[in-house]
Length: 221
View 1 (cartoon, rainbow, N blue to C red):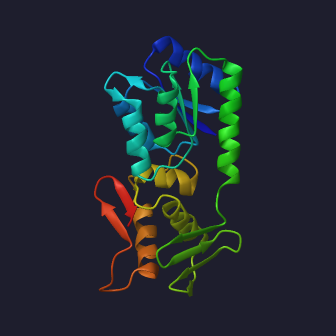
View 2 (cartoon, helix red, strand yellow):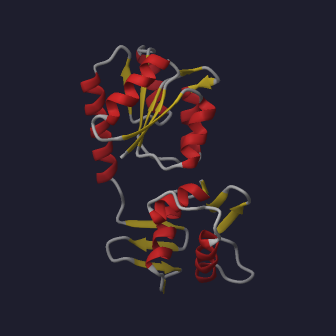
């Protein structure tokens, strides 16, 4: 499980990165909104621990931006702002939990475990996007009710997009999901699979399902 820690205080950031990693999680620690955006674009995360008072912006604005972009992984706000209105605003903007500083490490870890359990339990067995339907249990895909024959790799690729509709996915993130490693994104293998998937899903003269973001990645429209 990968945890992204967004915290500008060096001492606390180092402590969280080390302590959470000691409990079996892979941790990434960043200090600014810009670094958080880059980290999320470069690699998938299972949960985020988000401070609000960051040097280059407000964590709430960052959270709003993520939710509007379709990022739905759990976010736990960890902040010195402990007024009731601050908590309400954070939760209304899409946070899954809110913990005020100072905090107990044991409680923080318990809340992270709870968020990850809920996230795992809530994953749908059927994904739908417009005319596309994917049955994860039956491993079946249909378009306008017509069954499609996809390879295992194509199925995994389409699932990644269906879990992130409207969100631009970087080449690195897609390859990490599909090949479960830091695959060499300079190769054209991803482009080959995207071309094959498009040939099966898109019709000549019809509306495209995917958009290529040159130099960045792909987006399911």
